[in-house]
Image (cartoon, rainbow, N blue to C red):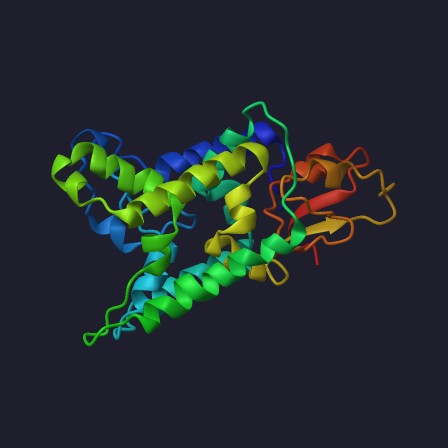
Length: 279
């Protein structure tokens, strides 16, 4: 089985995934949240639970909820679905199925100077995963065993954009209680959106804890990237066009690779293949 490496087809899949995760567009008018049975399931990509249009839960929000809870009956499901997606697909989820990933790519199309994120900063997202998703929800747990969802509460720009701002626009009674924390989150949102204009997939590279989880699975995932050393002429086109600044020839299973297929599409020798059973 081979991946769909055509950029137009990938964009269609991204838009379809965005629509599947956010079909309740009418809820924006009244600021209501969908609360049906589908909210018991997690979306594969980053999509805020509190977005009025959202059908599914956010896996990072769910992971924090069980990390800061004394009840572990749901934790196996959350961890299990993340590992299932990770082991089978790796960061294909980031490249094809993540709604916030699509937002970032559209922002990057705005004409502007384009720069690359310094490589050492890529490790920040692992610190975010450890501190805000795994440690703080547990450390902040109160006597009833409930902790704060620290990443959602203090960092997540997707949550601010998809959930916080729409809810405040439709619920005037909530506006008087806006404080410094929401101002901080709005600042993070503005910096993130601006960063996406200049740096491809800025949030994915720097802050996304979900991308960190899936990235750790890239080396063992069933979906692989392989470079035919005999066909490759080392022209550098794949590295130059990679939105994640990966050199697939040197690091085909890089934790940063989102398996978008752009390298395979641009390769003049058809030396790059993506798919299952490419060990």
